[in-house]
Amino acid sequence: MNLLDIRNLSIELIHDDQNILAVDKVSLSMKEGEVRGLVGESGSGKSLLAQALVGVLDDKWHVHADRFHWRGIDLLRLSIEERKTLLSRDIAMIFQEPMACLDPTTAIGEQLTEAIDSSQLSGFFWQRKQQRQSSAIKLLHKVGIKDHTACLTSYPHQLTDALCQRVMIAMALARRPILLIADEPTAAMENTNQGQIFRLLASLNQLKNMSILLISHDLENITHWTNTITVMYSGQFVEAGTTEQIFNKPLHPYTRALVDSSPSANLHLPAKSRLMTLPGSIPILQHIPIGCRLGPRCPRAQKACVNAPSVTNFHGHKVSCHFPLTPLKKPSKRIIKEAC
Amino acid sequence: MSGLLQVKELSKSYRHKNYWFNRKKTTVLAPISFNVDAHQTLAIIGKTGSGKSTLAKLLVGAEPASSGCIYLNGQALQSASYKQRCQHIRMIFQDSGTTLNPSLTILQLLDEPLKLNTLFNEVKRKEIIRITLQKVGLLGDHMNFYPHMFSGGQKQRISLARAIILQPKVIILDEALASLDPSLRSQMINLLLDLQQQMGLAYILISHNLGIIRHFSDNIMVLSKGEVVESGITRDVMSKPQHKVTQKLLMNQSFQLKPKKA
Image (tube, rainbow over all chains, first blue to last red; front, top):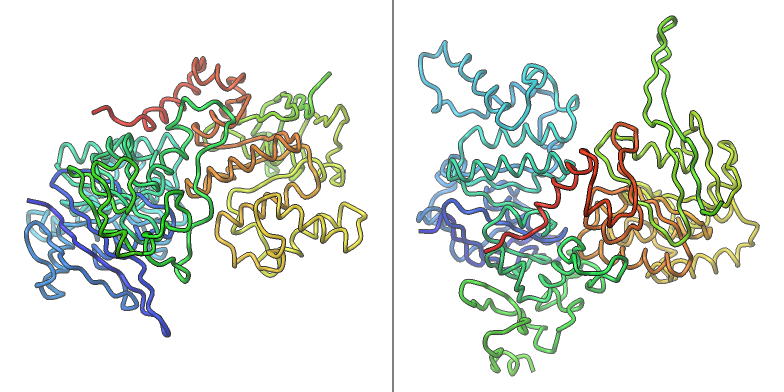
């Protein structure tokens, strides 16, 4: 049974004169104990998707989905209250920009103890405070903060970005979630710290069987840690498959370009040679191309690309392209005819 | 003595002023010497607080050095004469969104260095701006736009245009590629490499991303706590790191890069 099964999720921004489709029919499924990477450049809607998952988007955004199952429970049939209690129990999220997400007027210790669920505590009510405090300290040790007294008493602005990020991770882990959504957890950190955080997440995944949805804008950063990867571009689903499939045999021109554009993935390239890259820049939300949104930048674009492609499945390797790079079967004639 | 940019025994230390009797001194950068030739790229890596950015600031003259001197084409650069220095050594910052003045158009932004450093008249300056914008892959008509009308990658190109508009010899890239998306980053690398070939620029690249450094740089310098712990040709240092700090830095990234074998 899939842990999470989302089919055709769309997120629409309600604007005065026209509605903007920020995320266009993205499907995502996760198995239990899986680490899935969600990769996309800025404006690809990956953070929006994550926020829609935990249900923290405000009224401006309209979310539709054909299917939204969480551990076999159809969330679309539940009332909002029921859905909230279910999701807040099982899913935790590490938000981007820790400085902006922590409360600047409250000490870290208070924010962290608040996040600890009282169902985890035992004993009488006068023992609770002590227990909260000790479990907060344990959480800080877990994420690699050694000086817990200084950290608990300080305010967010007194800590560095990297420390704030660790506190955010500790808060997310406080509920012992089944699924952890990590939205660029290492954006503010340097390499040595990045490695530590990824190792921590990997160990939690293996010891506690916690599933992780790892969101990143850089493919090369996360490939070592993920089992499967979903690639998005400008709000559209691009490709999904195992890490090896995505990295070694990409089917979509965009994934190919992402892999080729990273110099560290192409060690055979002579130094100072030109890197493969896509022309143009990422479209802004107000001017999204119709059909396949990669169209204007795609080297393989043809007439059929003015229609949005449907998702094809090659042995679990899903790709959304009319003309994939190494097609196992020929693109169906029907689609091309329709476009013409 | 050859070499476009020569740095000799450059160092930086701060004095704490509050102590009368036991004056404390913090050394941020120990005396450091290196050479950069035209068409060459020197990469500087190190952890935070290792003095990378201080070195960049000393080179552009944003901060006075405590000791040592910088020679450009064999000519010593005085710490006070900004005129000479800002013509030849230019810098691109990490976050292009915050380094462009939002209330000025691109024309005004790029006009400023020309006005201050050259004697060209208005028509000629406009001409130069048009050519420079085309060089970095933008249109000449973009000069009437304001910075907020551009995307992140385009803003970084404008910063690059501002850097190369005075025909400099050395450009310092302080994490200039870090905040870009991967597909735009490779565009930017291609552009920088092209410009290096055309104009004979020397780059000093400060970066975390070892993949880019491996691809981009000829020489490398590893800093730790203000001291150079290792330096040499990039390929040699990367394949056989000698010092502990280098090994640690390399190890931390190299295992992230390789995809898992099935």
